[in-house]
Amino acid sequence: MADESGSSGNAGSFEQVVLPHLDAAYNLARWLVRNSHDAEDIVQEAYLRAFKFFGGYQGGNARVWLLKIVRNTSYSFLQTNRPADLGVEFDETLHTPTTSQPDAEASLLQAADSRTVHEALERLPVRFREIVILREFEGMSYKEIAATTEVPIGTVMSGLARARTQLKKDLLRAKEREEHRGV
Amino acid sequence: MACNDNQRLLHAYLDGELDLVRSIEFEDHLKSCLDCSRDFANQQALRKSLQAANLYQRAPESLKIKIRAQLPRAMPAKPIATGRRTAIEWLAVAAAIIVAIVLGAKVIPSVGGREQTNLLAEQIVANHIRSLQPGHLFDVESTDQHTVKPWFDGRLDFAPPVSDLADKGFPLVGGRLDYLDHRDVAALVYGRQKHFINVFIWPSESKTTKVPEVQTVRGYNLVFWQQDGMIFCAASDLNAAELERFAQLLQH
Image (cartoon, rainbow over all chains, first blue to last red; front, side, top):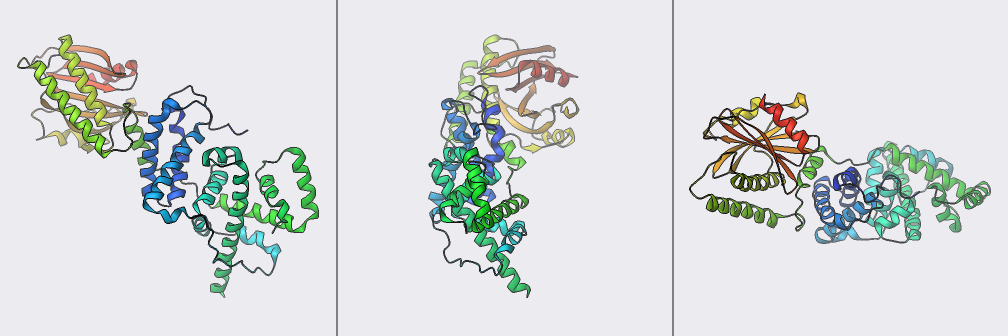
């Protein structure tokens, strides 16, 4: 079930196999480096690398193959330009929100607006953020995410659990602040 | 907060990653565990807000064009490259010098003469490839011939015929000055789906009309013809049949 949309065998030209995943490449780079200008440069460089390595592409999931290159290019960029962005720690200064009614949490979460969600995602450490992006926006299976990020499936699973718990906290906290201001 | 043992299972269940047996087991657990069922509802809500936020970042159209334009550079080389672009420029200069030396004084930009045409063809392919590097495709951007044609005024000692073939599926993208066969030439850039076509135009010494002739150089197709005292060469990675059709359209 892992190899659906991305797979096209090794038949086909670079244009047919790799180019269709341009949106996926840009989406991932954009979320990893958090600005569109750098993301464009990274995707261009990643495509050049992909073009150069295409001879070694053995078929299989082209989206995973390309996104691995995009991810490595993004990480090199961050390593050089913003090493602090590669930190793996959650922002522990976030206190756990104190919802008086635990049963209201779901409706609060669902009411979060787009900007709040965007900011909460950007606050996740990059290694957690990428898993959420690949899962929720790219619709990848655990197996595909594990292959793209080069970690075991178990790490994907626990990473998703931690990332989502953090997102939930962050969104609830934003709601709390909103209420304080509103009152 | 879901009970610890089931935290990971909860996410795997949410993501449809559990097999049937474990799914059923987990559903049973959800019925009896308030913490887990509450957290499951929260996670479903979180997913809904992530989807509703519509945060998928699509590649801008300009990036698509840039990437397509840089693709046909089939030569293996370093990625991204300031250094490389210069190298190619030098190669183009070197090629031009070699052509100049070989042709010597008997410069005949005639379509005939197999050997000369082959050298010329190599040069045209080099120019075509170079034009596809980022930022080299055109000097003047266009959607119709009325912006491109006047642009050449004062830049060339001849007036190249410019026509837009957008309604035939070959939109005019822009124009550029280029250098071929020891002289400035006009280069018109047309698009065809994901391909680009460079049409190089320069004056001929003879007034004869020559019908289109196709050549293939390093995987690129070239169509030469001569008409109204001008030499035309269309270069592209487009297939030969389509490029010939394009040449015929341009002749009329």
